Amino acid sequence: MIEKMREIVGVRFKEVGKIYYFDPTPRKYKLGECVIVETTRGVESGEIAVENRMVKESELVYPLKPIIRVATGRDRETITENRRREQEAFKICEEKIVAHKLEMKLVNVEYTFDRNKILFYFTADGRVDFRALVKDLASVFRTRIELRQIGVRDEAKMLGGIGICGRPFCCASYLGGFQPVSIKMAKEQGLSLNPVKISGTCGRLMCCLKYEQDTYNELYKTTPKVGAIVSTPDGKGTVVEQNILTGVLKVQLEKSPAAMPSTYQVSDVRIIKDGKIRVDKKEMDALKGLEDS
Image (cartoon, rainbow, N blue to C red; front, side, top):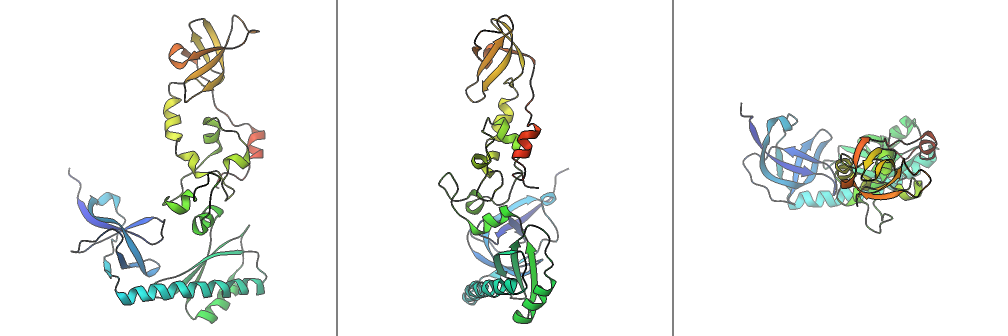
């Protein structure tokens, strides 16, 4: 059975954000074109990130809302005015947070295009009772107020910055969304489990640990791990060191346990019993908090 196809365009609401699909109606849209659309948050302005194309209906989330219009000159003036109002709202909210003595840090403020709602993004160590703050802000702005607590990775994405590599944060420059990153990935890639070296400015594991993980997963299918028992041209032994990228192994031979380990290429050995990569409890305790929960 041939699956039905549907024409869509992709719209992005943040410079580096998730892409959402909309019904293009009969019009053809160009990449980068500013459009006005209706979302669950209200009427919003966005940018065409995916031009008209056909996708499988199973990939869509319904209802697929139509694009209202291409942004006019007046719409662009509204967008500029909203950016100015966001800066003012940020200052006012910070003052209110201090007045209410709340343990929270304001990160960003967003107006919806139609100004029917203002969203205040903040970070905090725990739960915050901000009900009085919401009432206070509603009395000032006379519109719907939403306070949304975000994580430290989202904060880094919103604020941006320079990573330890000397380049802009990946999350703020091109990553549309976050993918899970684990301490096991760092272990499998042979990295030093030093929190300073494997964590980003946000204090969580660096997103770039994910980039090469698929390659490491493939290489581990043919490369014995440390602790593996292997057969070599010189007899049976245990892998004591490996370089997964070069395929070089150091094997302690059973027949000469007091001698220096012998060096072999992966192609020269046969796995009898593979080893396992484990992160022990002490390592986990030392790196507690780096994984995004």
